[in-house]
Every structure is written in structure tokens, then in C-alpha cells.
Length: 127
Image (cartoon, one colour):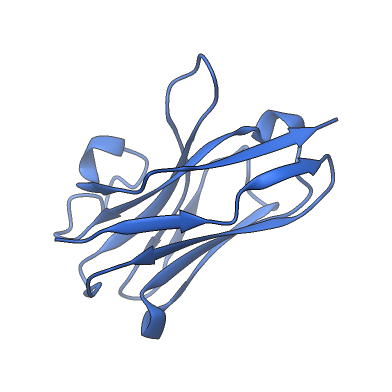
């Protein structure tokens, strides 16, 4: 069992930067994949970025590639999402997700592959 706690959301202006954190209560093993998703009002939850705990390979949504960076701190069991050059369309609730058994390894964009989810943190970007 893993609990995920996100932090770092806020109200920003276009062009600002922000770093989200996701702290996992349990130990993350090599088969795990950690992901970030977001959901804007009236829209479906969408994939943002993912990192495979073993090897650290990364996936990004096209809409955030070159602006967002996902990273991890193994010792702290924490995943980060560095968001640069934020745009109003990045406004959403951002969720951290964890798959501990390999379900998401080859399908990082598929939300049902992740068994554990955080409570979400709001990011609002004004123009």
C-alpha cells in the first residue's frame, strides 16, 4: 500500500515556473512507474509525464514536452514535476499516480494502469 501526497500548486501568471512534488509513503521498487496527470474543469483527466523508477526513462505529453520535466529522488521516494513557461491552458488539478507492479511500464499514458493516486493539487495560470 502506498499513499501519495502532492504539494506545490498555486496561482501563477503565464511564463512563470512551478515545481510540484509527490511524496510516497511506502517504498518504491524498481518495477514501479510514477506519473503525473491533470484534469481541467469540464475535461477528462489527461496524461502529463511519467518516469520509470528503474532506469529513469521518461515519457511526456506533446503539450508539455520541452517545458515540463519529471524527475525522482530515490532516497526520498519523491517525484517532481518542474513546470516552466506555464500557459493558461496548463490550468488544472494535477494528480500524482503510482503503479507498483509494472502495469504502466509500457502504457504510461493509460490512467487505469496506475493503482494509487494522490489527492491532487490545483495549478492556476492567468494570462
